[in-house]
Image (cartoon, rainbow, N blue to C red; front, top):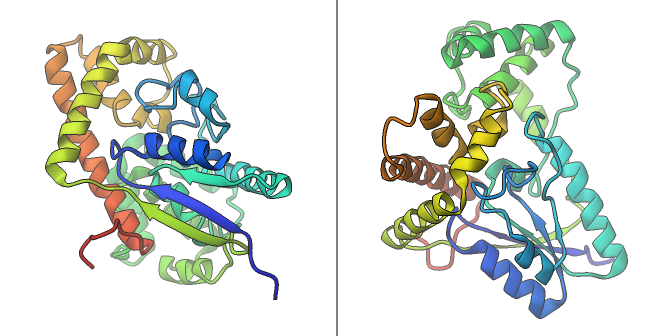
Length: 297
């Protein structure tokens, strides 16, 4: 059998140094970079997403950046379609490609299935949207009722987006979530024809906290408040992924509250949310069987 083409992935928690490492690899190999970041896909969200700046993008071709307006709900399915096009184009041209980023749900798409292709009726979408507007607890109650009183342990019941997607599928199919998940996991992934070579960059907690702290303050100095103020002026729904992204969410709340505290208090709020994101990212890496060199098993 012919060897499967190889695809390299570089991931790790936020602020670990993925951008610098990816650029060094691209320059050394003559390769290109495909972003695996669910915030970098949005145009205008540049500072708070730590998106590669124009100078960095001039050093190597980048993909997966500025694909959607913040008013859109850019899905993992849309990301996969873009990523597959980029991968196939680089293979055709014989160009090395590095997938670089730390968004767990996007990253997981390289290791397994992305969608069950279940058709969701408009009536079900409307019901779930109404429950989303009422808050996560309304979603949890409705889903628990449909599941016979309990939610499966594997479901991230604190994530409103995951709750909404699970409820849509439960109501549309009439099947228990465990059954739906088993059928989903049996499907081949969109990159099953490739050999994946993944590397994780991580740092000791004190060092990573220090890097997060420095980066947050640099973002504020470079214009995160102004960028968030422009986003607020659009009066977008609070449940949009762009509005909920770490850094923007805290700054938007701070602006709406009339800037009740100074920039240092805002920075500390962003630091806390960023550290919570690190924990979530590390869970994704473990779930996918990825670990940095020297990490405990």
